[in-house]
Image (cartoon, rainbow, N blue to C red):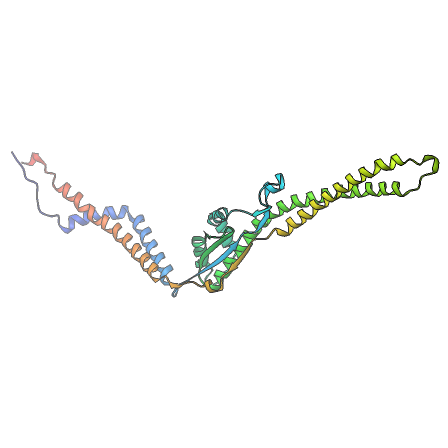
Length: 302
């Protein structure tokens, strides 16, 4: 014997009988979604129009004595403190960005939004020149853009200054060592000169002795000249070294002055869709379960 399942839709009372317990079980999920939507709405609508200001600056990486030149006298005498690629990686490091956000002094009215903007927008771009890197960032005001650039200049400058100081310490140590050798040679030259100029008694006069002293003096003076040349070259090497410098382009302090109303609208729409999807999921699923349950017929009754 064949039995047909009822095809009539469940009435409102049946739907509510299954929806209410399900809604009650999901009360925390619904409450969380409502709180989320309310928080996002309040955060976006409580403030007035929010504006984003973008800036651009050029970072010129400093010069330091090259390691290969100091060790082996090979290659260029000076080289960039670090490669532009390494500097760009430094700017992209989340820890470095967090340091910039903490160090920068933002205006109270825009501090919160500027911290978020700078942390997400700070980036470096390699330029055609070997030592130049373009830095771009966005903040909540023109003053905050300047403050962020000052923080970047301070942090990058400090890191590069530490590298430069280590290289210059090597040069300075070498200069001091050579100067000690020069002082010892000068003392030796003075002693030889005294021996040459000092008159010898007639019985002890020995011209062969003087002839031996003269070549030794020439060799000593040649070594002295060579050491003086080393000191002069290392001094020039120190003078060729440069600190890293950040130049803010006056024409690019505020590249864009844009409103983020579209972002606000998108976030609100997303929050609304999230709540709607949760509600629809709860409302649509129970009738299906209800239909399935109503479709079960006790065959013993027939």
